[in-house]
Image (tube, rainbow, N blue to C red):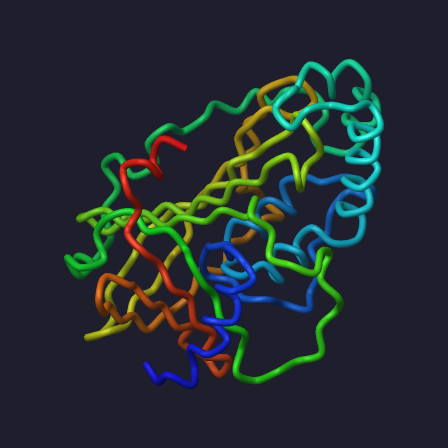
Length: 270
């Protein structure tokens, strides 16, 4: 991996923690959603993002406007970040109009999506097995005209992690907290599937399913991320491991690069 390619990575490290994910880099296409709300289409889009700009794109327009109204309400009510009761008491109507579906979902949470899951073909390289935390993301080498970011700095609540099992299952995890969803609301967006080795230093992530789980509007929600109108894209990467840092580079013309470090036991308790 050339040092020139990682210059943007170091710049983003100076700005703060950058988000993680997989399979989908920033795209000019905006997700379709029910007008004025944030729903499964947005979260399925978020689940495969790696960089913050992609997350912003997934949540732009109607979703962004709905969340801004909700955050204004909880801010004016003086709600604390983890006080779901405050948000439910003062902002319940606005909150329910901001998310789809409004009522609690009958979907059951999948606690261990990799249990029994196995990739077809070769097992992943042993070096990739474990849980990784995203620490930096580069900008694509081919600069494109981008819309302004929703917020000027990378947001700390876009926390990203990647888990790879010995049998070739992966789980991508994105934590969206009150800074994004309004005080008292949080979602853990997960996508999972198989990691397939396709060469000496190449892997492909094939996303199969996903869920967004967490307290929203005073109730725990389990939002499925698959359906007739929801399609995961997956993605191919060139990988490199040097001095404990895992680098994934998108295997396309953008050459966008992402760096991960192994998660510590303390990370798992957060």
